Amino acid sequence: MATLAKKMESCGVEPNWLDLPRELIESIMKKLLLVDKVRLKAVCKSWNKAATSYLWSHREKSPWLILPQEKVEEEEKDDDNDNKCNIFQGEDDRFYYSCFINFADQEQKRYKVNMYKGLGDDYYGPRCVGSSYGWLIIFDQTSLGCLFNPFTGTKIQLPIKADDTLVGKAILLSDPSSSSTKSFTLVIYYGFFHHLAFCIHKGNGEYKYIIKDKAWTRFGGAFYSDIMCHNNKLYALRFSECSKIKLENNGQVEVWDFDDCFPKKVATFKPPLPLPHGFLPPSLDFFPVSRCKFYSHMHLVESLGDILFVFLESSRSGIGQDIKEFFHVYKLLDHDGKRWEKVENLKGQALFIGENQAISLSAGEFPEWKENSIYVTSYIPHVRVYNLDEKVLRNLIEYFFVPLWIVPCCF
Image (tube, rainbow, N blue to C red; front, side, top):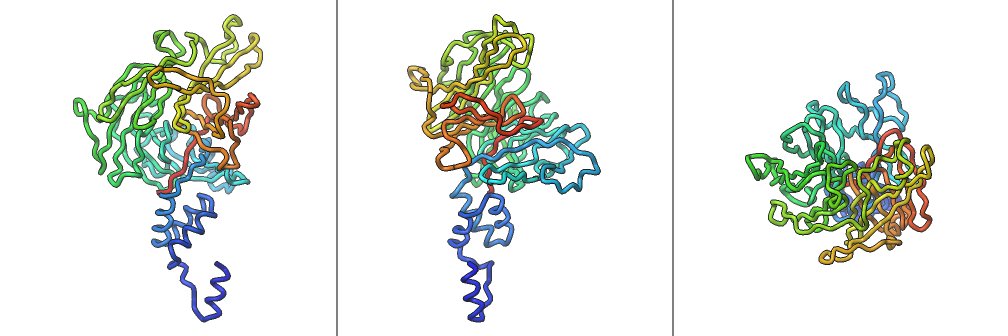
C-alpha cells in the first residue's frame, strides 16, 4: 500500500483512502486482529460497509475471555493501567465483566470495554448468564434482561420475567444477526428449582405470547444444571446435589424439539454411567472419607456434530487432603439405542467449558490452543486446561472471579 501511495504521489495524484476497492479492504482485514477490524469499521461509511460484509462471511471462531473486574475507588477512575477497567454502575454492584483477553494476541493484552454502560440506568446488578453467537445474555436482580453485543453496542430488550428469581443459564437457539427481523428463541433455567422457560422474539421488538399473554413460558421438569442447542433441538441435563430429584433422573439428558415453536420432548437419555446421589461439593473439608469419590460439574458440548457429555471426577484420600481431578468425556453414539462411548481423543478439537457456554473448535487452525484439551472456567475463579493425553489439570490464568467465554461478533 505504501508503494502504491508513492507511485500516485510521483504522478501528482493524491490517494483517496476512503475509496479503496472493497477487495483491497478485505485483503487488509485478513491480516488484522479483531480489535483492529473494529477500529477499521469506524473510519468511514465505505470502510464500514466493506468490513461488515467481510465479518459476516468470515466469523471469528476463536473464543475470547471476559474477565470480571472489581469496582475500584473513585481516585482510580483515571488510572491508565491496562489491567483496570473503569466501569461503575450501582452502589451495590461487586464487579462487572469488562476486560477482554484475545489469546491470539501473543502479548495477551487486556482490552477495556465499557460493556454494561450502554444498558441504561434501569439495570440493577447486571450479570451475564449466557453467551451465544457473539451475544451476551444479561439479566439483573430485578428480572430485567437483554441481548447485548459488547463489540458493537447493539442491544435487544427481553421481556421481564414473571418473578425476580435469578437466571442460572440462558442460550439462544438461533442467531439474531442472521435474520433481518432479528427473530430468535431464547431458553433459560431459573429459580431455586432450576425450571426451564422460553420466549420467542418475532422481530421489531415484538414477542410471541404462548400462554396467558406471558412471553416467558415454563416447560419440562426441574433441577436442570446445563442446556445446549444442536440442530434446533434443546439438550437439557438434569442434575442435583440434593435429594429433591429422583435418583434415576440424576444425570439424564432430555432432548426438546422446537420445530413447532412450543417445545416437545422427543427423547431422554440415561447418563453414561451411574452417578452417586446426594454428595457434597468438593470445597467442603468435612466431606466423609467413606464417600471421598464423587462426580460433579457436568456439561454438554457439541463437537463435530456429536453430543459430548463432559464431567469432572474428583477424589481425595482423606479429610484435608488435596483433591485429585480428572475430566471424562463420553459421546452419544445412537439416538435410538441411547448408547454412550468413552472418548479418549477429541480428534484435534479443543473444548471450552464455562458457566455461560460450552464450545468446540479445531485447535489445528488456531495455534494459541492445544488440541485434545479442555479449557474450563466453571466453578472456580481460574482458567484451567486439562489435556486428555497427559491427564493433568493445570492453571492457565488465576483470577478473583469466574471468567466467561465469548466468540466475538462485530455486526
